[in-house]
Length: 124
Image (cartoon, rainbow, N blue to C red; front, side):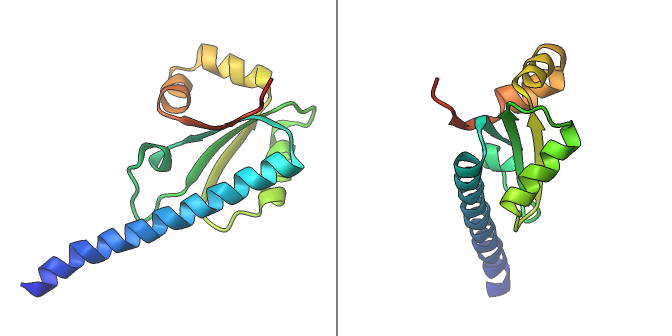
């Protein structure tokens, strides 16, 4: 009977530790991106943004940044800068791409705009 009670507590502690780790990494990403990059906006989405963590949760992040680089080169540049230490799903859009997706994609509007959280926005 005691074994039953210990399992949920252990899972709860592990999830709490996972949440702390993900939040520490997220803060590091924000610091690096704002110090060495020029993001206009950073949006967190997915399970971390919704507070619905599980043991395999990762960081889902949208970076909106002016750039002339092709999409995949932008991703490579950002990943090299932040050198993720946990699972990271990241996309880097130009402001124009971001606006187009917002206008055309119901999935994008629902998951990124509605459920996502703006965690950094450049002051204008």
